[in-house]
Image (cartoon, rainbow, N blue to C red; front, side, top):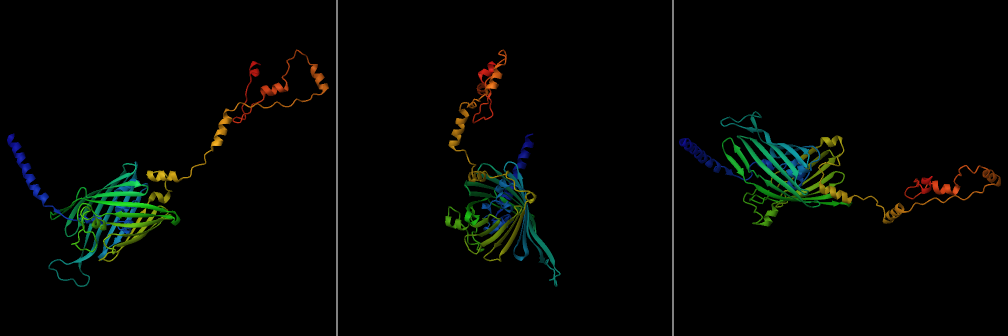
Length: 441
């Protein structure tokens, strides 16, 4: 028995000694699974790719899954981007609202190029267009979930799986967590912990790469402008807080940004942001910078909401080296296609409170009206004045007196009015009051 225990212990030690070099053989790189950082949506791209700050863009589920807590209806979104040398990026996502101020999102994307000519080693140059072609692409599947934790706090989690098909195949994985907190009215602060599970990729050759987690901050603010029939929205997203990254787009690898505690100015210049003006009738105009380091990274675009169920966005992105990029995205809601927006659902409590405050209250009764009603309700019963006595002719009076005295005498007109006439009050005009005389009779 002791020999068996020693044998098992030796095997465990052997496996541990074999796995430790493999773990330390992993290469730490910058930008593992970088395809996950490509901006898919035209709206966020037109705002300098400050995606973390933009709420309501369901093409940005990779970055801000917290917005799923505000999902009211099912949405299907698609985007297409044409890059350089026939490189294309296609993205599709679907949002499913769930009870309890939460939602689920799934996304699928492909980033690659097709019909790339190549020549195998030792083969002669082909004549004309008679050559072999290949395709390289990254395929990404994402699943996101978001929920409202508190009145002001939204939380989201996303998981991504990447498959790369190139000269050799590989798999990648990354998990992200995002949150947004409402400071006051339309002022929000957001945070993204990118790669909290670490961003890892493995290849058929046995090589293993990973990138350490990174954290980003974002701010957004909304300013209604009534005389322009719209609203200004301001968005800003910071550079990474933890590690040194290239802050500009001039492809100068010697230029490295510094962390905020090393150089706050450099850290701020590595951010991005944009401004959006949204008209009440559905048109939105946008402009931004994808890097504050250079003004050659200008972005612009527009969006249009059609009948509440269809949203079309366009973005233009300039680059200091490459040619400009054009991006188009479309979002469609099957429910809103045949129904009007519901008043109830995953409604923001802050928006609901603002709506109640801004609504005009109904006219309330004045103090004089209330006092008068109280006095009327407690006032004593007002009796009707008896009618005036009528003059009876002498002949009729003599005939009346001749009636036998044994017969019961009928009550007089005054008595009848005092005893049986209905009493009218201000509060109850039809009420009838009985007297003691009637009870005795």
